Amino acid sequence: MSETLERAEPTGDTLVVDVPEPKRPLAEVVPLDPWYVVRLVLFVAYALGYLWFFITEGLIIDRISVGISVGIFILIGHLGRPVRRWAWLLFDISCYCVMWLCYEQSRGWADRAGFALQVEAPRNIDRFLFFGTDPNVWMQRHFYDPQTITWYDKVASTTYFTHFIFPVIAIAIVWVTSHREWARFIKRFASLLFVSCTMFVIMPTVPPWMAADRKNYDFRIIEPLARHTGRGFRDLGMKGFVKGWQSALDWGNAVAAMPSLHSAFALFVPAFFLPRIKPVWLKVLVMLFPVLMLTSLVYFGEHWVIDGLVGWALVGLSFLFWGWFERRQLRVRANRARTAIQVRSAVSA
Amino acid sequence: MKRRVAKSRPVLLDGSFIAAVLNPDDPQHHDAVAAYEVLIDRYENGDDSLFAISTVLRQYPRDVRTGILAPIATVWIARQHRNAAAKVIASSPEQAMTLLMLRRERFRAIATATHDFDMFAIDVIRCAADIGGMTNTGLGPDVEQIPEESSGSKLN
Image (cartoon, rainbow over all chains, first blue to last red; front, side):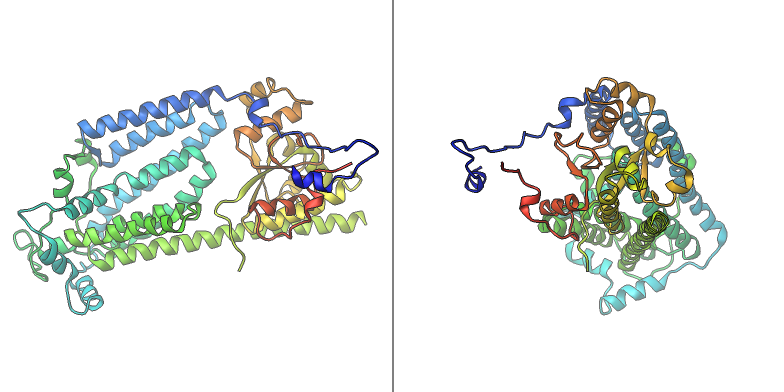
């Protein structure tokens, strides 16, 4: 205001200052969507219900139960939306289901395809990366105590289990908030899954815990390892919820170590949201999560280090490819508009 | 290398702006085309996402929609939007619908050839200079800043 007065010029005896009217918020003239309140209330109820289920039954882990829980969330998010939006949702859900079905089926294809099992190659790569040391074995020798569950056991175990909810929550939130962002997310996600599943089929890889297991398998290529993944999680009083229908649909593929989807998803979600995070310290903190995940996987003997690195590389490639493709689309449309403007100008001139 | 914003700014192009871009006889034509060209640059750079409501885009033939209006995505109008727009106090049904969609779809700017939206708390783009002025708020990195006088309050 003082700046305005300094620049003001007197007109006769009075000083006339044209002060702009304050801008009116849109909320003053546009009534609130009544469905917005309904959705908000139901979202809160859903969150409370999810929390109650988590405490009483455990963390929802199996894909069908996860699908149901996400489905309810998305239905709430679409309440009161136009019919066209529901039609999109139907299409999206079909694509989503096909994507996961292909993922599940790929486990069966992997068994039938009969590609050679990768046993020593990942171990040799890990040894090369760590100057002759097996990182899984080294970590368990230095940090694992069968008698004691330490704080880092709990952190690592909890990190491992976030894999079952972290990406799904991200998908559901993006789905409900922005269809465009969901499309961007799912293109990258589906590409990652597709390449990973192809690798599971053509490059079945023995995970460290199997390579070390003397009782059930005969690989014996590294020293014995403890597979204590759920120990810390259970010690925190938490458990996993797996419904019976999982067993009917699960074609479990124990030799799907390369690439590590745990590592890949742990990088995927932070990487997708990273451009929206402003503080650098928070960016760094968020990007430590995939490192923590890979460290946990190696510590538990679930994956080789190279599995995680390949998972990260695939995430990077997926983002690079779709980033390039989307920029190209923008360029093509922009050029089309510019050309049309030039043609119109020439015609009108 | 150009700085990229985290998320592109959604801009709604209203009927008057698109009409001004397309009609060489419109008094706002040159300003609108100049502003539209800047918006296209920003769209290509990922700084802005351009939208128009379906009832506006429907007025133009397909070759126009896929040509000069190619960067503009459609915001679909449903019956519920028409019903809600009827409750909005505005100078015209078009303005009511635009206001409704501005709020419902959380647009951050509107490109228009009118002064209908000047009173509302939203960035209004009528010419290229308006887009330049918005770079002061950190929304756009690639457009030259304009002098403060041209966007500030006027003194008599």
